[in-house]
Amino acid sequence: MAISDIVGGLADNPYFGAGAGLFGVGVLTAAARKGMQAGMILFRRHFMMTLEVSRRDKCYEWLLQWITNNTKHTQHLSVETKFEQLETGKVKTHFDFIPSVGTHFFSYKNTWIRVERNREPGSQGFNFEGQPFETVQLTAFGRDRSIYFDILERARKEALHKDVGKTLMYTAFGADWRQFGAPRERRPLESVILDENVKERIIEDVREFIATPDWYLERGIPYRRGYLLYGPPGSGKSSFITALAGELEYGICVLNLSDRSLSDDRLNHLMNVTPPHTIVLLEDVDACFVSREKPTEESSRAFEGLNRVTLSGLLNMLDGVVSAEARLLFMTTNHIDRLDPALIRPGRVDVKEYIGDASDYQLKGIFRRFYANVDDALAEKFVQKIRNKRSKVSMAQIQGLFMFYKESPRTMIDEGIDRLFNQ
Image 1 (cartoon, rainbow, N blue to C red):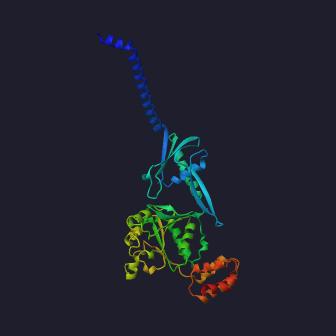
Image 2 (image 1 turned 180 degrees about the vertical axis):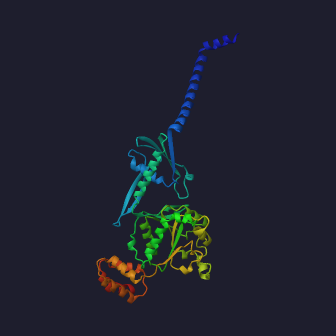
């Protein structure tokens, strides 16, 4: 029997014809599916653009908040509760609704954008800060990247606009800096009364440093500046640094060297990732290290095992090979004699200023600050009575006295000073 006869017989068989038809339909369907998948991949590759932002990125929270503020049809929301302290002292509660995990759509400049917020499932999906690992993906038609630049820039400006006129405080958390508390109202520089010309000298030096980065670069000098404010407690060292940050429109990174989780490596890392336009503040450095030149048995026992940061690690952080550039650092201490000379040598501490007990100049200044409409004779009487009672007094003591006599300067002089020093 010829092959043509066999093929002809199969063609006349109805069972074979039905099977071949089904097979053909299956082949065509699979081919169409593969073609659609390949076409979608090519379409996404050539006609769509995706931006991915992870939680680790600085703009992650900015972007979520901007999407919330500029989209009105998002139905799946997550809530974030925030508190704001008003000038009256009351606390106002804010509820921010941000897009929850899932898919969302919004239109921006006549372009539809798909937002997909993803979260890693399970216990492995959390970082060391206890926050879930998340990403946000934005997908839009076209190849123009400027739409994403525009969105991110708008998100940044809106986020920073909320903090205009306020001082941001940062504290070390893990391997990065986290904003600590709500933004604070800037403290006026005039509210901190230091001895004559001390405040002006520091401010002038800081402004000159900020304005001359090219001078350091041209001479091969590391672009960093260190300041040490020393003196008795309550003299206004920390208050002045807070007011200075407000004057410069800077934030403050508070670094606690006594933190048991802080090591030399982590300290160096933190100093290299400080937020821009911030002052790094190390308070009471005498409470963390004992001078190697004048150690005592009592002080050595007191500081043994206090922290994991070594003096060598701190010195390398301040002026080592990997120390950070473009850095503005302030240290405070009540006992400069307890500090190791290597810690406060030039290059690590460039400017030292003594902030001492209240001088006559400061006493007059703070008196006029609290009681603006009094004559000079009353201010002189106040200073004279203070000196008759005590030759040394801190600005903190005087300010605390004024808090009991807000509107009564004469009563404060006649009764308050006696009560303060007779306690």
